[in-house]
Length: 534
Image (cartoon, rainbow, N blue to C red; front, side):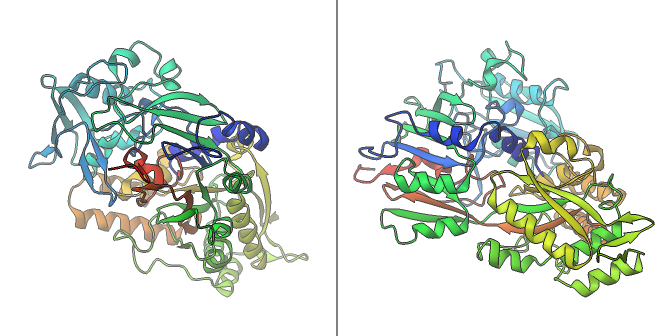
C-alpha cells in the first residue's frame, strides 16, 4: 500500500456525497454542460490528494500538471527528458547520476528555474522534519549538489536500479517554499511550479481547478481550463457524466458499460498495477495466525471476483506484482481450494463450533473487515471475501466507514484496501511489507513482520544486478505464500468514459491512485480540440 494512494483517499471522504457533487461543477465556464468547443474540460475523479506539494509526495510518480520533474514517462512508460535536456549520465559503479538542465525555464510566477531548486527539493524531502511518507524511496540518496545553474549531480549510497524513475517527481521553487513551513505552509495548497498548468483553486472535497500556463516551456496547452471534480460515489459520477456536467470520468465496469452505445463518448481502458487486498493484522489473535492467513488465501475465489465484480476487467492477484509482469514469480498462484483451506485449519487445531464457525483454545475465528464508504468495488470485494471465508468456517463482519474511522483501528482490524505502483518492484513492496514501517501511517497496514522478506527487500533495492534483484523479489513472493499477511484479491483495470471532442487521448500503465495523475488526461496538455489545427 503506498501512503500516497491511501492518504489521498482519506482526504476524499471529508465531505458527504451531496456536498462533493453539488459543488463539483457549479462554476460556469469550467466545462461540461453547455460548453462551446473543447478548450475546457471537467473530469470526475474519486479521490483527491492530501497536499499539492511535491515536497510531501504529490506527483512523485509524474503527471502532476503544476510541476515538472527532471524526467517524465511517455505513453509507453519509458523515461524521457523534461526539466533535464537528456536522460542522466550514470557512472560505471551506478553511484553518480548527472543531469544537464533545460535552460530558459521559468516558474509560473516568472522566476527562473535553476539547479538550486532541484537541490532544495530533494534535500527537503529527505529532511527528518518533512512529513513525506514515501521518503524511503530515496533512501539510496547520499547527496545532491548543483554545478552551476544548469547541472545537478546526485550521489548514491548504494546502486539503486530505479533511481532515474524517482526523478520524475516535481521540482519546487526554493524562492517560495524555503520561506515556509514545509508541512503546513501555503505552498501545500497554493503551489507554484514550472508545469503546463497553473492552479486556480482547490475547494477540498469538491474540485481542483487549473488554467493553462501560457509561458510553458513545452508550449501553451490548447485545453485552457481543466477541472478535476472530486466525486467519491461511483453512481453519482456516472449520473453527472450522463447529464453533461462532466466531460469525462473514471467508472467501475458495470457503470462504464452503460455508455457503450453513446456515440458522443469513448471508453478508454488502462491496464494497471492497482490491486485490492485484505489486511490481516499481525496484532489480531485471529488474523495474526498463520493457519488462518493460509486458509483464507486459498478459500477466496479470485476468478469469481474478476468475473462477477469486475466483469472481466482485471485479473486474479496473488501478490503486489501482476501475473503478466516480468517480476511475477511463476508457481506462486493460489487456486481456489476450499477443501485445502479446511484441512489447513483442521491441522492447526481450528475446529468447527456448534454454529460452524471454528474455534481454537477458546478463540472464535472471527474478525471485522472495514471498507471505505461509498466505494462499491471495495464493498463488493469485502462481501465476496466474507462469503468465501464463511464456507471455511471463518466469520468476517463487514463494516463501512471513512478513513478517519478506519485508521485508528488498523492495528487490530482487517481493511479492504488498495495499492499498486507501476515500474520497479521496490516502489510498492518496500512500503507495503517492510516490518519497520508497521504503524507508519498507511505504510505496512498489516504490521507484517517477516525477517526473510525484510532481508529480500533490502537485497532487491541495493544492487543493479537484475538477476540478483529477481531472486530477491522471487523470495518475497514465495514467502507471501508461506505466511500471507495480506490476502491479495484482484488487479483491476481502469475504465474511463470521455466526451469524444478531443484528439490525442491515450492511457498509460496506471498506479492505484487512478484518475488523479493517471487516466486519459495524463497528457491533457497535449489534447487538441477537434476542429482545431494541430
